[in-house]
Image (cartoon, rainbow, N blue to C red; front, side):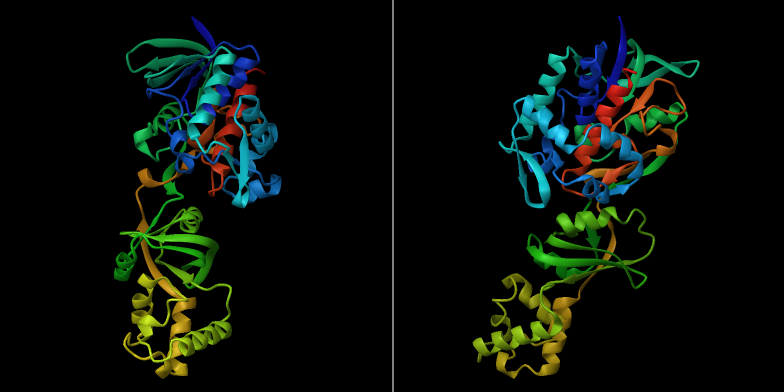
Length: 409
């Protein structure tokens, strides 16, 4: 049997691409090497699935880190509001949370996967699980089909590669699409981790493992210049730091060739003078107590000995004996807590992959290869990535839809 379109990869981009093309009358087969569809999608948003973001056009593109202009046509063809409408038509109601993040009302990623599977079935897409593609066949610079790992060939007029990146390899994202595209002459921008925790060398960090800080401001400093600043939540780990603002900072730093420091402002809402006044009030409140017992109103208890040590203050000194100079040292640390970054966690621990198929070799209006006719790309396999908040999944859905509709024309 000859198919009009062969889709390689059963993630969000592949599922929507296949269903979109089939809805227009194409005979479509979807090939997924895992035992089920949407394996990585199942894990997103800690299992809650942050499907998209309810922000406007400008907001969406302000949160794309790599090659945002390349995505104009894709987002215009299928935006976040259209995705929400599609999910609703498939029985998934959504809700908007902090930062315009959109989740299914049920807080279950499995409901989104079921809806997309229903979309495939309603449009008669043939689904083949446990089916790995090894090679794409090309004749006279046109795709003619694919070769499976069991040596079987499937013939098709067009092929859509939607195999994902290289993060969370246990979900099947092992770089297959990069390899197949490279075999056909495409250039691959070296895959690197994005939205990934950072490794630090500061010994005191381990003492704070598991501690979450909210409403803090963090700057990334390279060569004494602030590269990016984020406000929100961070977490100390056994290797360094993680949490939403740390992950976002990591995506701005594609190359970490120079030493980097993080400067954490633990009290960004207070000026130095206001913080000094706050300290004086607390010390008056806890007069006669040791310093280590007089900062509970200001800091998490586990953090107090670390901050005092970094400030060079004696934890056993009485609060009412702290001098103005010593308060100044304390204020400085609270507003400029420094961490030395030595690198990132491995690519496999990143939420998304930065890098992939060079966008210069893909038509942004159709997502068709400029090198091989009738070969299309969608999702994380392309060199595009964004910050957290539902933007990366929207990229997958938008590029999936555009590639699917382009295959019809």
